[in-house]
Length: 344
Image (cartoon, rainbow, N blue to C red):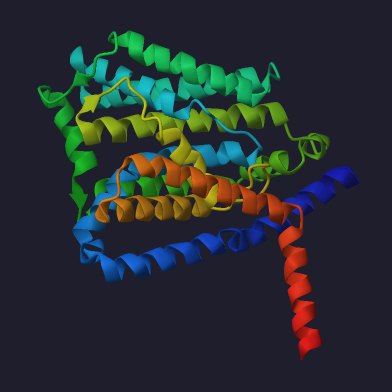
């Protein structure tokens, strides 16, 4: 292993311990909003309301877990919401044509994986910039979803074979929504892969310094293909959650979904330049957005403002991250510390 590669891996291992500082600000924001809503909106504290928050953010969280892997390598998958829609249509059409629920679910998840794998191969092997590729596939996957049924939604109410999926997604396991348990399992698997496997270390290394990672023997191409495949896999799982919640497969993509997913990942402290962050931060980012959106609804604020709020939060989160990466925040803190020392 070269000295440059060793320094890169050492940097990765040390920077991963700094993540707490990256999402401390959003934790403070959650606490402040939580306190405000608890005093102004009594229904906010009810378990029924929190179940609503969990279910409404289940798709964002599922997609966010996959997106985190991509952002950790310094990329972004703009097509992830469209991939979820296309995968959902495959699931719905499979049920419509008599497939058992488990086969339809596997078909939807497999389609999402295929979409992600296609992105990864073009980006990793052909070296086409991720922005160009995923912007193009955003449109392609959306078109596939629309063309599959000429733009019509596939209603699954009348198909008994779908009842198992609907019950699983909308049901409860003990006091908890089942989707929370499913998200917890996906989180546990993803966190284990990131923090306890060589592949996870390679993801951080590629995001931190791809050239140094290559010098250490890491297959940068293989890592890039894998992380986009993981994002596609998360789109496949998200399509199951989405169709289960709606009991229908819709080819239309929520225009705010992709923004919410990216915002959750970046608000949670994952650096958009790659190499720093993790899944716990993404969970915190999703929780923050869920509380904000729920607060807007409880306060009777028009839903049209939710996109504006998410966009402003995203800009603020990325702006703070840029300032931190440039050392502006650390220099400001040092200056403040010196001023207090002089004053004493």
